[in-house]
Image 1 (spheres, one colour):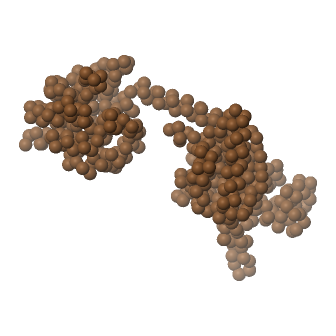
Image 2: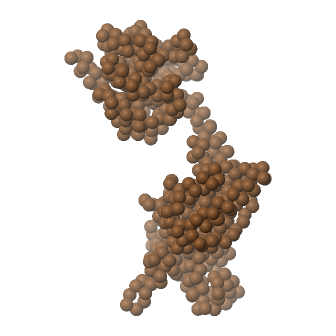
Image 3: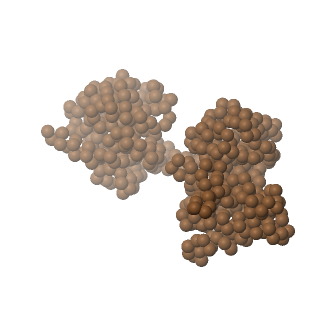
Length: 545
């Protein structure tokens, strides 16, 4: 009864907590008992509920330093050159005498051939200390439970001949152990992040043991250094950027921060299959061009009109500007055709990403990018993060309702199927409409306004008023620092910028308290291609990790 009560209290103190493994190999600068004790003190101060330590000497030093449960182990080299964990009764006795609250014994298939299960029974019979089994498979755990261990840990998963192909932590394995055993399961081995530790608890782990990720400065430093080195390599990698618009498709090869070999061709509007072939043909030519230049492309990024799910690689929704585009598994089709990593992003999101890395959004945590042309698109950064929304449909700025419906006037229709959308009042067609038929295109209106023609200037003023109303809604919601205007209507259009900087404060609350400014994009025509290249590099970075 005393043993049961002692075990119950011990387990309660570990439940749901973090156990830190304080170990170091012989060549490590921290390989001494005093250092291990200091690591243990720091871990307990940080919230650890227990410590795992190797050797009776380290256990004794840790016991003097902290007053939490200690899982004691003794690693011993064997005649085959490999190590077993606590392979003898003498080791277990020394650990218990040194102050170990629990003794861990390896119970893998290899250890069982060396008598591990009989050792477990002897420890339980002769030493007043609970035994934990370090295992790699469900079958090994079941055998250890039948031999009488009080706890099981997944320590050896990925470190035995049978499991050495497994290189990452798998919460599913923890769940499988919990489903088959009646005793507590501790997650240990390749738990590298707090997120993985939390996943282990959600999978049913009684507690989580973390070692290298906390107590091995050399290994931790190497991980950081490798990440920085990999980031630098990815940042310079040659990638293909494609910006698919309803009118034109633009492409380029991005090497480092330089966009080379830009080109643009009309976008076919004849259905999904033709559009896919169009894009794959363009990408194939650019990939071959980069290869022949001696700088092979490592990934492809596609900025597309419509809203996308960058995780699944599908088009979530597209208007009739791109017929049949909704639902297209773009990444799957491209990767199958070109055998390179492929990433997709909304075209104006890509433009905002480009501004964040190369343009007016550098160093700005809160900004909005507006693309003004055939339609109106938006990309918003808030708190330094791109706003995507719950369904990847955020920043549909062109479809903010600014029109009205009453008995006297019907709001302007929009190609999305609604009425009164901002796009209906601030598209290129709307600008031409405001000029009362005197000009055939938005470009002509802008040129005429620059030349001082009154009708064109009036048209731009009216356009700016509607745009300012839509921008004001965004200001009230997100409180950005900068609006970055891109697209054909914004480029080189100082008259529009002057109008907006004058009009916008009239429509927003506390205008004088804000450091709000409106500027034109300096990335000009190929901004979306730059953004697509950045998205491609992010995909490449994920592949490397």
